Length: 130
Image 1 (spheres, rainbow, N blue to C red):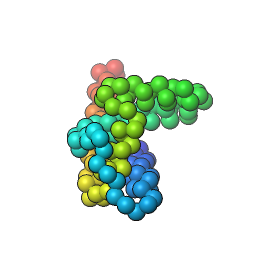
Image 2 (cartoon, one colour):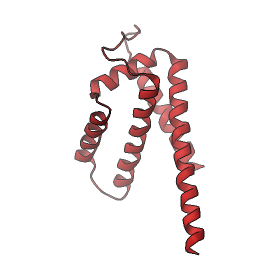
Image 3 (cartoon, rainbow, N blue to C red):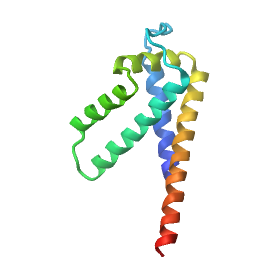
């Protein structure tokens, strides 16, 4: 329950930051490379998992400064994009709040499904070990 709240809070914060980036009040122009909604959802889901890993390392006292750059570089390399392409697409989709909300809801739904799968796997492992 607490995790779901934290994920919701984080996704909500991300949405706020994305919409706040467009300070001039003019809509973002279409990026040179437009990611599909599905691509953006996948990238954002992986970015949330990446951030969770970084937060865990911070919580146990490890420095994550270099690791964060390395992991994000690998994320963007995996999806064959750059940080700029990602940011341009976030701003582009943020111009349509309903669409961005739908994207964020799907990211949250995927993260919730992943969490349920891990919990179920842990439960089945615990039963087998008892």
